[in-house]
Length: 143
Image (tube, rainbow, N blue to C red):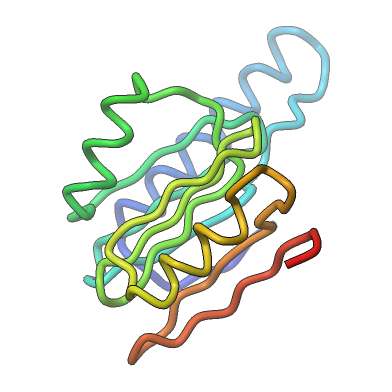
C-alpha cells in the first residue's frame, strides 16, 4: 500500500505496475514480489523516477541530460537499486553491482562521492538531495 501526492503520470505508472503484478499472479498462480524500491522527485512537479525491487524502472518529466545519456549508454538496463534526484537537477543512481554514478552535484559532493567510491572499499547506501546544496548520505566503510 502506498500514498502520494504527485504527477498523474506517476499514478498511471504505479497503477500499470499493480495491474501487471496482479496479472502475473493470476496467470502463474504465484505471488509476484516486485514492489517499489525507491521514488525520486525532480525539479518540476512532473519529474519522477521509480525503481522497482527487480531493478526495473520508469521515469517521466525532464531528466538531467547527463542522466538521460547515462541510462541510454547503459542500454536502459533493469539493474538499478535506487535513483535519487534533487531540486537543482542533481542525480545519483546505484546499480545492483554496487556501482554508482552521479551528476549535477556540487564539487563538494562530487569529491566526497569519489573519495567514498574510489578503490571500492566503501559502499554508498543512499543519498538524498535537498535545497540550497543540502544533502544526506549514508555509506558503509572506513571513510
